[in-house]
Image (cartoon, rainbow, N blue to C red; front, side, top):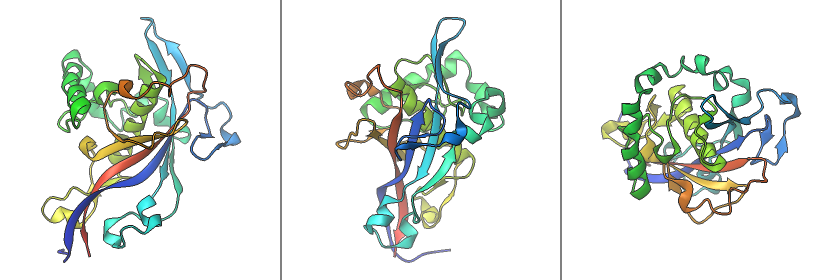
Length: 254
């Protein structure tokens, strides 16, 4: 259908993420869920090649801040509702088992080769100076590879960088599962939300809110953390992180 109104686009704060090695630790809410105990507890390890790796859980919160502040009043231009826990990786068996993860991302085998991964250097450079490249959808820029959609991270250079990688993977995973819709303003598509199984990286940004709030800036997906991680990645912490996720939204304002 056609909707009469003004086509607009804006950056919408739409989600919060917890990244933690402790199951049930709700970083942004400030408490833990005791029911999970030590189930699938996160860790740091080295593989047979003595390469550093780690595992993290991710929690995804629905966070419609624009709706709460009543900044935009058109219901067709914002996500409404209350703060809600949308996803807990602790109860998802595909988050801990790489073999089960292939159910959601069978195409990962195509990109598990040096040529495909080498192409991610272009994505890392693009995100460092401007925006990531959507055409290289399997790349997470300087963070590594978007695949597989689970909490295992190989070649960990810093816990903060790993926490961003699994947050970006979770955004991709929820797109793939149809839990996050797209709103790219092309032709009549601007009037509706629609499924997008491939993550549009250019339309996402993140902002650190826990444990060290960074209120002065947002960063595109894939951008290196070297610019701003100083003082936010101490070795004596429990490796808990929280991020505010921003998404570009196009709509017709009534």
